[in-house]
Length: 205
Ligand SMILES: [Zn+2]
Image (cartoon, rainbow, N blue to C red):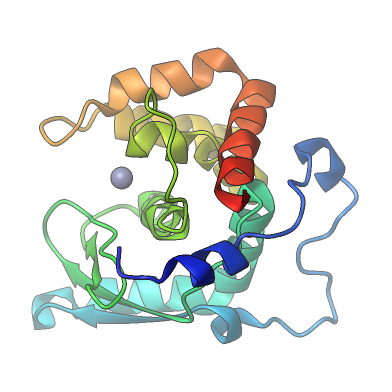
């Protein structure tokens, strides 16, 4: 957490766009140039050459979908990315978001859909880094899960989102994802959105 407070505050602006309002807003209308690598540049470096193909898969994913991912995350959270360059290392181990100049780490062997879902997940941790004030009853993942499912669903559909909840819920050892996901899904979309909006609002005060 090295960012100065003023910058973090400036970065949080705008209103929370209700998810109901999404239906009429095309994310990437045809004919409009994508600002893909423009807003948040990502570089994907294989830890060694055995991960070169996986790094290329992530690179292609970001080139093709980066702009719509960024837009979906910003709309879903009401936050704006303050980072313009994010470095990621592709390796074989548990993924982690990193922070600032510390690179993100992404597992090489994930199937294509899990690569997408995990990239959004880890970027979400980075996006949420600007939220300095946190409710005492919500840990880092519960805060993220207030919009992660809804962003996944908006980007790739309900089946995808449900599958990725199952994938993350099956992860053991580092954190109890299953209980956190059960909590997030049980409170429902509207309450997730209003809880997150409250957190953003508290950070703007
Ligand atoms: Zn996480």
